[in-house]
Length: 276
Ligand SMILES: [Zn+2]
Image (cartoon, rainbow, N blue to C red; front, side):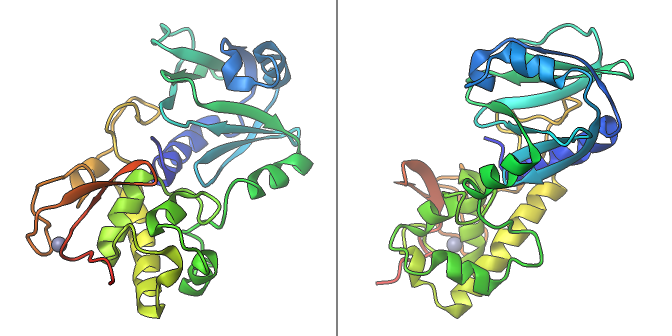
């Protein structure tokens, strides 16, 4: 599933290609993508719009339009975007297509169909995002103190708290496991139990892990690809994710796998000990 580094990579790649372009025609053929409104209705609203800017908030890709509307895209599990010459052959599981005024088009593919496209007015956007995502971890305002506030009093497992997008925006199963390994914190320990040194380690680890992911242009395991079809390479840098039984590169112990918050969870049983 695309997480912050994957969505940010897509945003950076698409920004120069889409900014200033006009949507000549939109075609959306999946009612699940746009519900509660009909796909034809969204397609009609998008036609003729000019793209002003691409931003990201957590795992949401935000296509700001000159009209003041914003197309809010969430890729969920298997959504991906492809930028190509208009009229190119459709790919399997293609759900939507935006034809642009320079002879190119943006195609959206989604095998599992959990992704969403919503068109929001300026005054709806802030409220929509604030209800769904907490602070961005890569902005200067994100400090160990802010992290302490987000986790304070929470008895849930640390991993579950970090997967909750309202705690911090953009982390998912991969980058949480990787950040917890870097911070040497057990994924099941109580989220509110971290002392100052642990909070500082976790703060730094979250940033370093996400930045490494962006530098490697994301992790391609299955469906994630860059808009030109290329793959990311972060999967080659995983320290724990998917590495059950392999030696921890810090201490040599075999990486363990368990289940936390319903998700497969990998950690080093020696350097991520659970406090007693
Ligand atoms: Zn270890």
